[in-house]
View 1 (cartoon, rainbow, N blue to C red):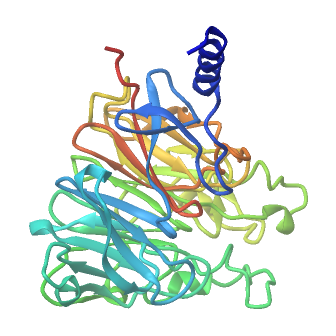
View 2 (cartoon, rainbow, N blue to C red; view 1 turned 180 degrees about the vertical axis):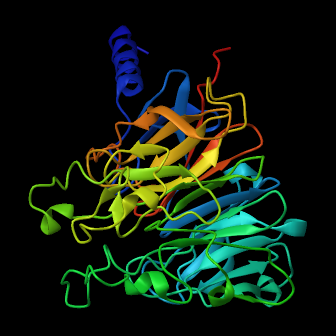
Length: 408
């Protein structure tokens, strides 16, 4: 080879090595480098952490859970009946994508049950099935029936208690108890949703058995929670809820800012307590639709999260690989406004109550053309190695938050 050819070849090699990764198509992530065994995506993280892309094209990915080394994702199938699926990725997410169960109605929450089974919250019910069965479809059993399947919030979020019981969210049908024509509710009457069977804006608590439990037969474990899409249970059995508060408070009272109010409530739940929706918001403030509400007797949240952050997933982190996070809550903010699309952590006091300002673990998740879509985190799940899976619905992807690999 002539000297000139050798120099040209070397320059071409250096240029290729220095060239950035190809731009990603809309709605997908550009990857470059490694994040603990998965392609690394370009997001801002707390020091020592990185985010890897586990899988794409997962439909409308919502709940995520793992049994052994198998990772399960609930594809809600969009807002259509009978289009939902349960997907499986073996080998901790490295395996081939499989459809385990199909034909579901908007599956959302998902938690492991006894003997390797999975509980899945569909619109209208909670089922249990065996994902390892020769015919998973034939193993399906309804454990909770009669959940509301209409209105703005028909999705069932869930959390499992140490004693095998389940907590299930029943979200509100409306934004703020407005009437069918969109007019304000009658302030002299109870909101009709709150006296239905089962009421809306509550958390139910039940123990699955051999026969289905009727949701309408259950007394609410807690009420006044517009849409508790983020639920977590502490080792003590205590329940935590991060709820999605109302929108457009300025339409009811132009002096109030929709951007600044109301905050999303994060609470250590007390059995039987009423947390105020739709009569009160924030720390016992009367809603403009119910100016004479007695908010002093409603339970105030322990912590106020940013307005419209829309927490949809929450776990108690119990691992040592995310520096400084052991014993803290991890929350995913799904919201599309400036306060949303990020992962944060929140501390707990000795009684398990949320305290202190949230600190950011993943951010910089605004839409960046050719690099990454806007973050849409929903489900969170801690793997045995201490890393954390993050499902995204609008992007149909599964990500993994992990420590930056150590250099050899």
